[in-house]
Amino acid sequence: MKTLRLAIVLLVLVAIGVIGAQWLAREDIRDWGEVFVRVGGYDITATVPGAILALVAAALLLWIVWSLLALPFRTWGRHRRKRARAQLIEGLEALHHGHWQRAEKSLDRAAQDAEVGAIARAGAVRGAQAREDPAATERHLQALAERNPTSHALLVAEDALRGAQPAQALVALDAPAAQPLPPRGLYLRAQALSEIGRAGDAWGLLGPLRQQRALAPEAQARFERDLAARTLEQAGDANVLAERWEALPKPLRVEPAVVAAYAARAAVLHWDDAATHALEHALDSRWDEGLIALYGKLPVGKLDSRRASAQRWIQTHSDSPALLLTLARLARQQGQWPQAQDFLHRALAQGAGADAWEELGDGYAADGQDLLARRSYANALAASRGEVATALPERDLRQQIHDHAVGEERDEHGMPRLRN
Image (cartoon, rainbow, N blue to C red; front, side, top):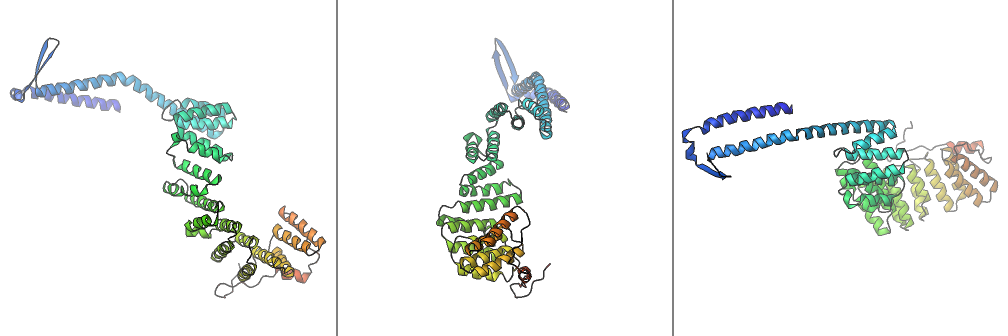
């Protein structure tokens, strides 16, 4: 195709030259002016149009000569690039199939080409790592750092994060030669910042990540939830915690993992009202067994108000084992062991596991019933292993029927709920 195009260009130039020669032969052409040039004792006279056409012809002749002289080199370059691409394809296919040594050799040869060198060298690194050859891995990494510092930083950061070394990943990603980071680099940097306790700084990268679509929509939403929880967990004081909580989008403030992180951190910082109110609001918006379990375990006071809220929820979630366990914990903290015991047996009947048995054991131990305490602890261990728990001898048939009974659930309008 290129040869045909060159032939057409030459034919067009010849036609232009013929037409130009006929035009220059006209008698009135000298009225345009003349050009006089003396070179090496020779005098050359030409009309202005003739001189211009001569210069154009000379330039075209030089271009043709240069193209012909460079043709072998261009042909060799095309052949070399074609061979490098073939080696790259062969190496990547071998890497995908697990032929590590063959993949590394093909990719090492392909890496000599400037256009595909970076991706080939990165593949060679993976091949050497799969062979567990540290020397070859370091050699390929060094070559990649010289050829493409950004790709080198991404590889090092991925390996460092996989090895639980976020600080090392951050050093690689923050290297001046690796800037600006591509979307993948921004995501890795956000991960590294989050894992070294700087989730607040990582939060600022969510905008560029969302704008550049570095993650699929579901993965982006999941990463935002995880990062939001970490920013709250890493808040240094109540003011920072409140600021970060208020800065979160409203949908995130009812996500169970985010609410749990906020409530747990608020409780640690002795901000009891914030902890309980956040959980209550989230549970009123969307029921979650994990949040109601946390509601009963929070190291805060407010036993009466928490017990009242839990009693209100039992009207619509009477079969919730986590809610029954929470009611048992609150009742025991209020010194009402008989009521707590009843809630625990109901929770166990509804599917509560090791936590309920352990709570029951703690209650029996505090009440001086050592035999029942030991059996409860044994059942807690069995439940944690997925084994069947042994029924306690103190529960008769009537009590067991009562434990399994579930009250009628009603919605917020007082209408009974239909069970599936």
